[in-house]
Image (cartoon, rainbow, N blue to C red; front, side, top):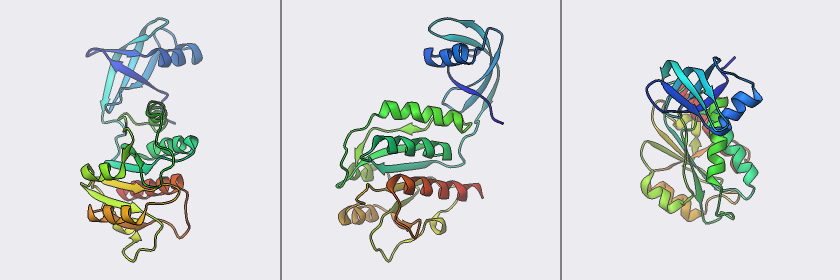
Amino acid sequence: MGYQLFFAVQESTDILHLSADESRHACKVLRHKQGDRLHCIDGKGNLFQATIESISDRETQLRIDNTTAGFGIPPCPLHLAVAILRNPDRFEWLVEKAIEIGVTEITPLITERTEKKRIHTERLRKIALAALKQSQRALMSVINEPVSLKGFLKNNNSGQCFIAHCDTDAEKKPLHHCIKPGIATTLLIGPEGDFSPAEIILAKEKGFVPVMISPSTLRTETAAVVCCQIVAQVNMQ
């Protein structure tokens, strides 16, 4: 069984503060009190065991008893660049599951066939934090602002890069055959209508390798989660 984790800000070498929301959950909902010991993360990879010193309406102060660096950090960076979905609930589900699997960075993409151009990134970051605590890790994943596919490809083609698309492509190989463990990975996943032929060509010109992940046609959010799990599984071996 894992820890009940709380997100905290480290104010000094030995003091942590819980935000109003985290404090409310810890002290009002779970009824922790002064003298109780909590497990906290800072989003920077550190796990703290800390004792509650004071509780107020706006925050809770804790004294650090012990620190574990590098708690639950994924073995390798995994960047998921995925087209924004029409249904925001489905995109939020995608973000939650991707973070639980171990994705370290997510970029919402605006492609030629993307119907919805805006997304609530602050809400996604809250969902990502909850998923981080659920998955027992301490390094906060990056949730970027939406960007066009062309803009993304200009600056994100290092490490091993893959594009999953539905078009017939003789170059496509199974993703699990292409991944090399221990190398930073970037995954491109298109919208409901898939990437356009021109976008696929552009991605390939930028070094993205076309891959297949299933004999079935998957929803965008399903394809994204399956890809992330395949990469995570290879990196565990």
